[in-house]
Length: 496
Ligand code: GLU
Image (cartoon, rainbow, N blue to C red):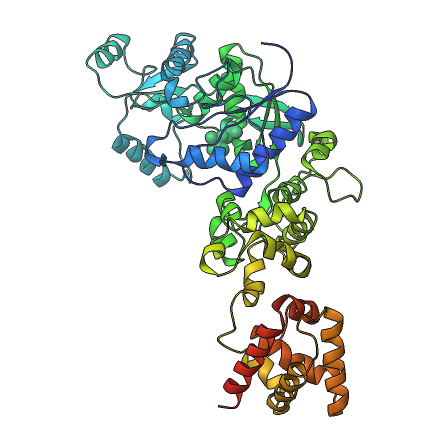
């Protein structure tokens, strides 16, 4: 394999792709593309109990939606495959055997109850967090304590076993993390990590190291929550005689109210947490990309808006911060608004035509949408708000906003009555926005009231609400017949 940059995004298919995972994928992608390298998607599916059907498809769909192009994956193929860990079982067993033969890993036959008994015993004697380690292994049932014939016999009779890493008692493990600098861990705090489970599957640690090596991964870019696993990985690289990849552990994503942005916290704060929520919610993919890029990184100036290509140009791991990055949903919406408004009307129309309202409302056509877009585009933050705010262009209002009515006051009905008369008497059928403005103005003047006294009742009558897009162009788009019908309906309704 060549020396060029190879990175991987290695999610476990245990559910929908979380936005934290998406940021990890994005940083890997930006780094790879910045260096003309390769972005690999590897599916870490060794934990059968947590496997979720459809999760892999969700991950791929989410990455594609964001414009993250995958070079190698279970479905894109590649020379380093297979890219699903469940399809690489033999390779992990071979590596585990290599470690056992080198006397840096061992078989352990202890049952869950025996391990629990050991823990209880140690807890009782004052050890608050006992683990299976360099001290306790000596009193357990494993290939270090049992005679070799007995080990052989147990293996031959098919007794369940795991393979554990023989973590040295007192050693320092040190590595350089691009984001965190020199990181040092003492092995005395590490347990003898299980590498192969009794079901013949590797644990994350072994599979991850073997694959990163076999797939020629040059840089491991992943969330901070994996930092504590890194010393175990470093030991594995050393024992397997392999060069470890360069490490970069990304800062945590924090909730605005403090603490890690967990699923529960996100829900409380109204932050959608899965990428598919953003897809289904009709957010702008470039907005999410731009926002996530800045969630822990910045190019070092005060620029904020960058396309994916620009981000690729600007990105560097050296500029990723160590400190947790707060998820500011308002900022995300600011990006969303920006990317929404900067899209060509024709493209937006195509997307609007795919929304369910296109079928549930009458008269939704490309032409009509195109005419309405200039009015609504500037007022919405998300595409699906178009129909929320613009329903009245397709349907007569059924209800009238109470607050708006209260604000319009007693005078509203009599104003609507006069407005109807003056509009009916208007010589033109096809009024321009300016002509509607003149009509409102003239009516207000004749009645000796301010513009507000005629505009609010008109708005309420045509849309049912007290706010919305500019009034006079809205009236022109609705047309005189509809406006008159709605004024009449409001009058009936309000005075009944
Ligand atoms: N499978 C791990 C995850 O779900 C991968 C961690 C890593 O990148 O090493 O995030």
